[in-house]
Amino acid sequence: MPVRKVVRRSGKNFRGYFPSRKVGGLIGWESIHERDAILILEYTPEVKTFEEQPSEETYYLDDGTARKYYPDLRVDYADGRVVDIEIKPSQKLENPVLAEKLSLVARRYAQLNREFVVWTEREIRAEPRFSQYKALHRQRPRQFRIAQEI
Image (tube, rainbow, N blue to C red; front, side, top):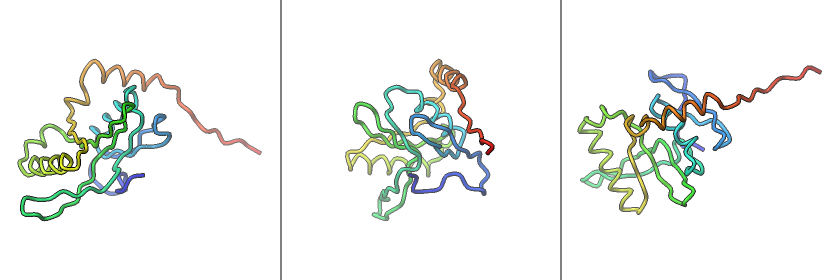
């Protein structure tokens, strides 16, 4: 269950829900990149399960000040690995403030012996995998609930 609500009425970005059979429910996303990453996780055989906004993490600035961080996704792999993923457009990583923040977050994860990665559109939309997974998703049978009349 997410620790931070992803899909809200306010906000300027695209937001929505992805119907995941792997998770058995709807997974919230707050950017097109996150939606596409969820598609990849849904169809990657090595992925056992995943969740959005899984936890509130604490990282520290160089002066010792504590800051809160919410990973976009947590992925449980079939081999037992657990990886927290941050999704960002590659252009935003050029921002030195954001780059420093993610560096501090990565350092904290390393101190805790936990895995943390940043995915950009380059990793998410790598071809031919991305097109193949999109085609699989389009071909997936849709399930609709039909109200029965009494």
